[in-house]
Amino acid sequence: MAVREEIRNYVLDNYLFTDDQSKLEDDNSFLETGILDSNGVMEIIFFLEDEYGVAISQEEMIPENLDSVSRIVSFVASKNG
Image (cartoon, rainbow, N blue to C red; front, side, top):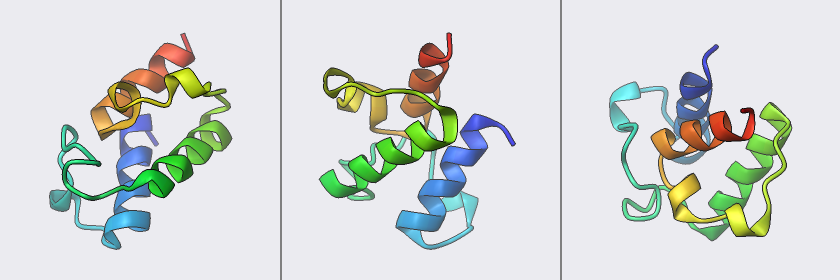
């Protein structure tokens, strides 16, 4: 399964409680739409570290890296170089 699909499915299953792909656009801001709060962001970070073996520093825990499916996909790709 592709990274984008895995992240979308994780967010849909764990935060929107649905498998309806139309409920989440790749560029939707998790924070602006209320999909995630600060605890949810931490859970996403743990998921990314476990699933993709990336280490995420405090400095990298910013919306520019983690606030949408698209941003997370780009961030994971940059970490896996």
